[in-house]
Structures are given as C-alpha cells and as structure tokens.
Length: 83
View: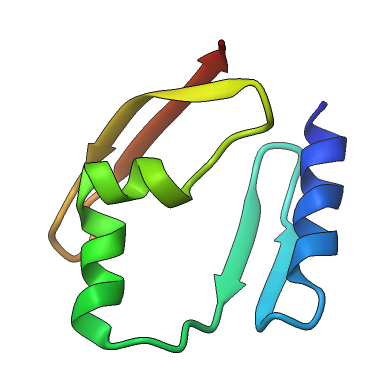
C-alpha cells in the first residue's frame, strides 16, 4: 500500500513546486514551495486542528494522533487508522 501512496504523492507533486525523494524503505522526504505568508504557513504546521484538515491519509483513513512540537527541532507524531 505504501508504494501506491508514494506514487500518488509523486503524481500530485508534478508541476506544483513539490519534490518527493524516497530515502529508504522507511523514510520519504517531501519538499514543498508554499506561496503564503510565513506566519500562516507556520500555523498550518503547528495547529493540530489545521493539520487534521490538510494532512490527509489515504481514502477511508482518519488521523487518530496529532501531536505537534511547536518549537524549532521539536518532533511531530501523527497516526492514521482505517475508518
């Protein structure tokens, strides 16, 4: 299933300022260029309610965990499960 998700990301990224690199069997790097004010982009990445709106899993899945570190170097933890 991961191969399908990665391919979907590649297809979506084409021509949208997004790059996807498969680093290993367990690591993927996604780089995006976002045209928006810095403070709003930061908020979209540090507010759990906003993260749940845009960081979607595969169809039929829902985010069950959204723990966000809001300082530089902090970690995120997200998890999804089938509905």
